[in-house]
Image (cartoon, rainbow, N blue to C red; front, side, top):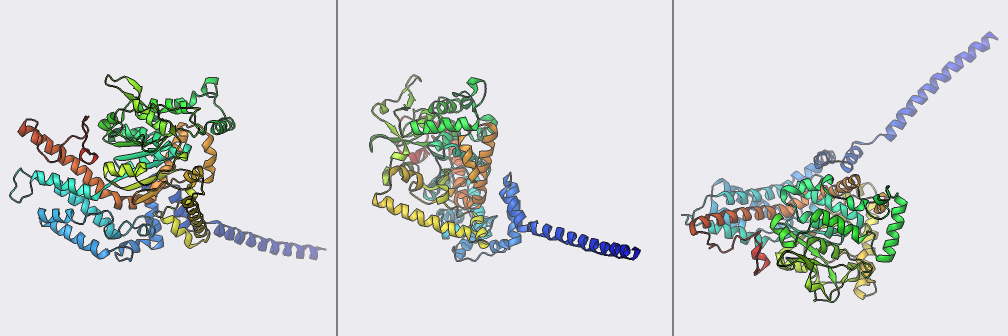
Length: 571
């Protein structure tokens, strides 16, 4: 009996040892299986970054891990003319080092175009997370520095070299005119339209926010909020604590009853309003919210204050009977908040007719007389193309030849593709899901365009599924949205929710920062230096000629004008 007990104890001990070893290796295997690779970890940090600096650090580390930094350091590529870029880069550096101002001016004046050598090709921006070829970055940087160098040159009315102060002003004006201008276009989005604030914040922090901002529908509300604030005020305003949202708490069923509606009650109320009036949001609440944040400011007053060119698109009955692009040139005395509401007119306008208001000669607020027989309509009922398009009119007025489009419509995002985001391409190296979905969406989009061309696609579906034609090169920015965000469409805007949407919008901009710098950095530097030289030139002439302006281009920006010969000269 003792022998069997001993053998059983020995066997139990051996089995216990094997069991412990098995558990050890099982834990190791599970831990190894569940552990993330360095690439997955960096991708996670990239997707969940809270600031651009954190995102950029993860992008650099991910490029090093994937050897994408070697691709950036190698200037050669079939996607652009690297020989041309290298030649111009060496010429610019040589002229600046030799203090040869006239040669530098000639280099800047000739051949300075946005897509020189195809450097804006999106295929150059989806190979690495942190940016494009270093040669392209160096070229853009040196051109910007050269513009600053020319601006800082000391000139007198008759310089021995022939480069006078008037010649400097004309150089910057003509170069800026030839290069063209960029407009930020904020397109719709309903509650997702709050992501526009994040896109504007990210562009502003990186110094890439255009002075020309255009808004449609919900984008018009955001454009109105931004267009009335100066450069110094904008960053503080984009902090959610500075935006007044009390109107949403005082709406029916909200704070007036002593308590807030829950998600279900808000969803039911908005769905009822949508089927009755054609809009999820109450037009009266929108009016109160916009007026609280914008005030009774006209387009011209907003331009004088902020120096930003605010444009709001509206759709009116009839073609050619009413301007569909409102700004400080076409509607200087119209109140900004009333134009933003007109852009948000529902498809059933009889339930909530919108009236445009303006300021008369005495400053009193009265209905704009030009809208007496005009009925504003929803953009879902309008199909404008060619010269009738508001963006085409914008291009004519302000020399706009490039567009940054902020697209937040949730039903349009699956049909779009951010080619400037390297994650869209690099993630497809390990999975066939994304390329196949991309192929399916492109095919669906192609068939929809065919139906629209043949006239078989209803107007409402066209506005939902097909983007507005952009009359020029464009870059589409898509916020970082997911399926769970659809449930937030039925939530009232709050301070916490606003921070959430702003961060979503910012994350949609960060992967495109490199592409935006290549496209817009030279333009922004030209505009800044031109304004500096023009103000300096105006001050010098005023001192010598008792306020008489003799320059070819008058320094009249920011001053109310009764006569406006053209938009190009004013701006």
